[in-house]
Length: 386
Image (cartoon, rainbow, N blue to C red; front, side):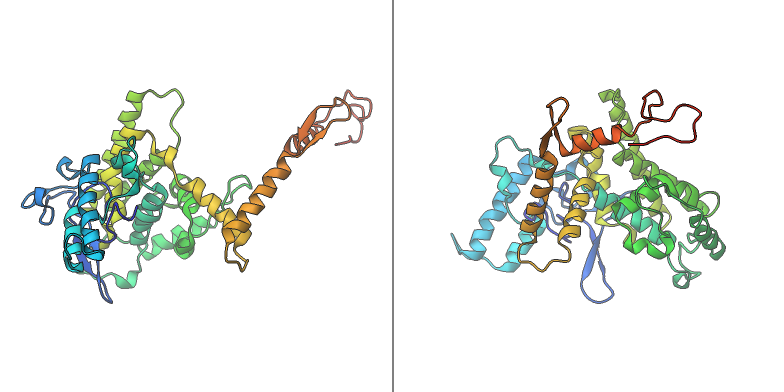
């Protein structure tokens, strides 16, 4: 993956296109790339085939194809040999970095050797990180930014929640009580959003936001943005109906892509700060619709299952001091699965049942059958369970 993209580079931060971002100086040192180009085209300079052109995000001229990945990667692979091996001649690190900026990569991935792989759709968008940790988190942080940081001269000074609205916002959270089968309980997003995990953000978008953001809590200009973003997130995380046709799915995918594009366009029109135009937002605009057209629903490629397994691994090995925690986790997982696969013969029928099947049979016997002789008769004071 590291060879397919160039992290925090003006060209190459997005794996799937060659759009040229602009840099924004950090408070300390260095700079961060920011991606605009949703309402007005941005002039391109570094990539030769687009030099001098003004293009918007998502333009077909910027898209990377399998052929581009292979050709650009092969060039950078050859330059890598010249940099470190000096064959056929030596180049400097500066020359290598300039070439990486033009091609948007640092080498040829090993997957290119597989004849059946299309590098343009080899990797899918990590919706949990890009949408939830990226776009949704940035929107909420912007909405709940400190009142002390607001200056009357700022173009977005009106796009902030009032103190009264924040009090109602926090008070509503105190009335949210979840059942035990729901999962993670609600944590006040004003105080604890920095500790939110993927499921917390997803629960907030799907469930809590409809009550927390109800009415005029949000500034008027942000209300439509909020509900449009919530609708987009549910499309990319909810499974599709089983009887949905391909044509119906493509219509829904196009509608979600248009909503997300309208969200970013409105952000530019409202003149929000540059830090809202992140690479996460750019990736979602650039790739998600094409990915769904090529591979199907993005919900089928969610990274939530992987994150849950990671949490299980952290729970088992987080307090260990070990050089190989993955071995301890693998051993524990094998033991657990082996214990679930143990079988024991039923004395009555002789049939063998696994541990889980035995548990299911035991729980099934807890059903009350008032006709059986060993239970109390109907109308009696009690009955026996188990």
